Length: 431
Ligand code: UD1
Ligand code: MG
Image (cartoon, rainbow, N blue to C red; front, side, top):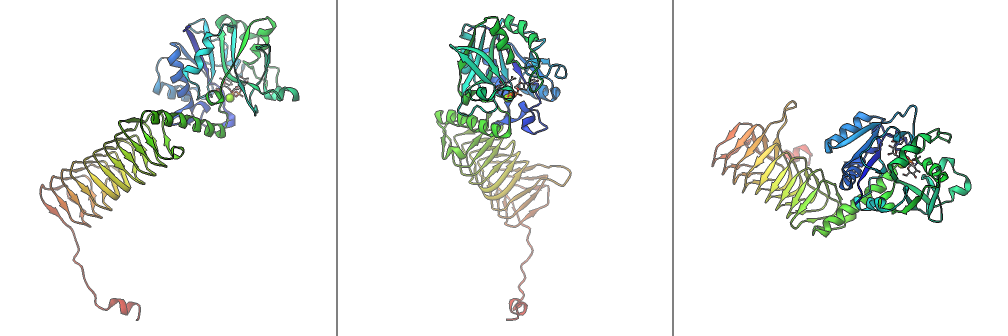
């Protein structure tokens, strides 16, 4: 593989997203669009450069959360707006340069490699679309690119062209540096279009080859509708990868799994589940309509309709319907119905009855609940944290535990004696 530098253009305003958030930071499968691009780009290059301007600190801070070995350049977007302006004053390591738009989150290293093997001064990514709306149209003649015309500048005849520029370009370094400053801004948007470099290079008889690419890898995201379309494609990729690895999914079109999630062993995921963050699911069955956020689930079954919030850790555990777990560790536990378990550590053999609540918050601070082994917690009990329940304890149904500790082997019971008021019903309803 020829060595190449990669430049990702991420300085634009992204106004069609109608958002205060920079376009390249909108998420696809739980990670910013630009994250996906950088992740793939790094597989084929040791020199990744990103051009920023609009909200540059927000964008670079986010990128630096994931990657450190990145060079940032700043575009003078006041004097030189547009994709052509973005590439002025760039200095990169290698003689071959791959330029990528920052709004193409579906590209992969494998689909980028061919750009580096074709022998030409410029290689241009070209999509052939039934509906070319929004993209720059590419005029091709004898398998050479003649020019690109942006939609806003195109004649009626040019608008009919179905070959469009996908936004990936491979340049010889000297070609890019010698033409980039010649680009003018006499167009509908008064911007410096990188795409104009094609016609300039063509005048000098440089070779400009089209490389026909697939929309599923190269679509550009300019609007929230595009974002949703790209999300579907990325989700299908993620799910088909895991199914290939042996994960069973029922109605996978209804399941959402983020990029950082990992499955191990044999897992079954039923319909309508959402699994996010860096969750790890190992040898477990996730029943219908569960939400699992950034949690670990090992040798367990969860749901239907359960919610594991971040930092939950389940091993050998059964979680049933309408149970919410947050920042808790449960090992060998059963919590079959309607519970809230937050900031808790629960040990093996313990049964949590229906309606049990760890009262972990007093309005100011969060407190811990420790529950030992073989504890039986009767239904509708409230455990007011901080509290420790030692091993082999029974908590009677309906108990409110307002103590700091329940000693080993004991029964805890707090009940009001039942009163009977005879004939009350008949008096009340006057029957
Ligand atoms: C661009 C291409 C169009 C192509 C389409 C593919 C140009 C002039 N047009 O149009 O031919 O069909 O991509 O998706 O290049 N950016 C900067 N600085 C700027 C402006 C934009 O860095 O001043 C960055 C953006 O952040 C974005 C990328 O360049 O990541 C493309 O910009 P965008 O505005 O989306 O261009 P398109 O109109 O989609
Ligand atoms: Mg775009």
